[in-house]
Length: 326
Length: 266
Image (cartoon, rainbow over all chains, first blue to last red; front, side):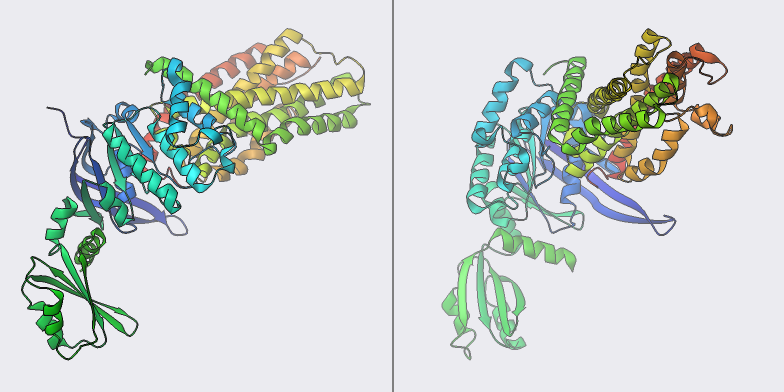
């Protein structure tokens, strides 16, 4: 049987740094604490998590740029710690951002250099470079120095480089960060088209709508641990329902909150303060509770603002991350 | 995909090409490697023009080495530091090519530009002096001149490994720069330095090669008592040791940076 694209078992990663005047103090930071995960071939898998959750650490371990402290990670059935040189030709890594490119030479020269480092057949190399430039829409700027590129163009060049050697898995770390909406949309469309071609995508992102739009399955990583892995629809169930009702008002009393909490189908009640304004968020299962029923449970507040929406990935994410923080 | 040795040669050639293009595109390298040798050449000429051709030749050697050592030795280390600064070290290390081959390509370009710098010094002084500069053994000199570059490059590769290892390699480089320059005899013969410095200097391949070069160049030169041929043997041996060290160090350094996770630091 063909192994999964990625399989991770009890993976940990601890960073040790020496500090102090004589570097005699060792500070240990646990970036990953027993991560277990499996990514299927041909899917877009999203890894979400707050800053410092361990996303980049996990991506770098899978991309063979970092060794795990303990546990095991396999990419295409190969051990990242022992078989890095066999994994590297079969994966692509797009770290994105302004760095990671040779700025003083052209985009084409950058691709040519990496094509040679990947050992792409000489006979087809230049055509492959042209194809990639065309695919990401950089054909016209191919011979301009990279230092003249906009951030979006650099991001496209990163993508072209990541795909140059036709990888089976592409690791994308924040692929649309800093892009204007049009470029970001083009990038997302492009990522979807890659999966149609059989590439497995491992995506990390801070943009929830992006992950929701692109990913078939999502894992939420916080404080170095995976707190949930599933489809967005299944994760909605995990955080208490696919409907979300929001109420905004002032000085809600405990008795009012209790009445809301006891409404049928309400699985979770969250409160947030925005200056003088208080927002109550209800996660709701089923259709038994509607807006008039919520309003009627607060008879003393005829002017209260109430609205309903579908539980978003952002709601799920925040619930899961906050739960873990408690 | 090509086989492993084919891939490595491709990588070597790609790295050489990219280093050359980057060199041409960056005034901070073009200027010192073309203008500095001319300045060094004129300075050497002005200092020794009335001291006779042998001393002028000695000055030419010092100035040429001055031009070559920075370009060849430190250019190689610095290029790896620049990989850290540009953030290109990580994408390069995710390719199947061992990083040593990438560094080797840069060393080739740096050695060639260093050689051009050295030749420029000679041409400038020869043109200004308007008299032949009597090289003792011209053929040996030519071979040794290139060999000196190789010895500098071998130390440069080791230095490049230190840059992969730590972002603080620049500190080590700047700290040791002057000591290396004087200690290996780039500017004047090591034999003129206090005796206790000689054993340390002999740990570095350029010390042997530069002494041999002076034997082959300067009539009546008195360097290490063992003479030209033992100098050459010592240079070959220490260079081979450094190349061996570089290969081993690169493998260990790669392992270390994957463990420490500091590749992205700059």
